[in-house]
Image 1 (cartoon, rainbow, N blue to C red):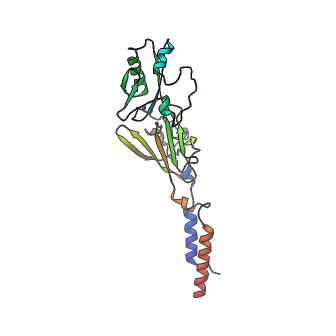
Image 2: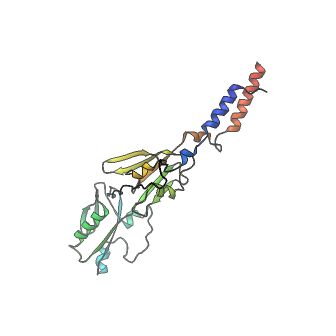
Image 3: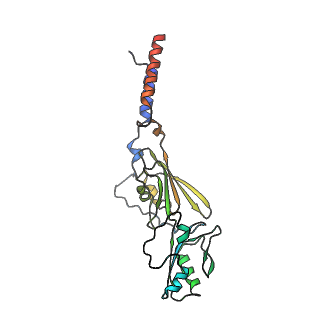
Length: 254
């Protein structure tokens, strides 16, 4: 039986659309020498936002004074934080950017870095305790990975300088149909929500201010158009059977 031109065109279109080239999957492509040195800009320090949670530890020569300000005993070396326990073991930042410290009252922390807050809390506590050593850490320090990621989810940030590739590695990298040319980053700032789209296939990402992730960032991996024609998902058997039936009926009617 002679192959119908219509059927041939459909088959060629399907297979061409389903192709995912190596160029679309390769990270950090470059022009020039393979050993080119790229110096990313220093990441900006995160400034505290409303509804963040701060863990504050105060250590003084007198344990009784320390207990007045600590939400956990000083001897607690391991801390397990969950969504339910975050408010219990930390100081929540209210909508206006304040925390309520026992005896010291409200302290403005919104829009400030952890280093600045540590210094200011230490100064406030000097009016109550002498020689206080203050440590301030973020409790809700997470990055969210959604879309075409092997393991989408919310992952903790354990280091100050975590770049976009290290963040994606926690989720098992993008799937083969994750669009590496159009990755989106959603970031909350004091001015509002920022949405940026960038590519991972070019080394220029390393010079971007979004190369390093921030607490509460959301990274969205968009799907490629060809995902619809994925061999595991697209019903090729049904399509070919329907087309074959159509061609046979067409030939009979002719």
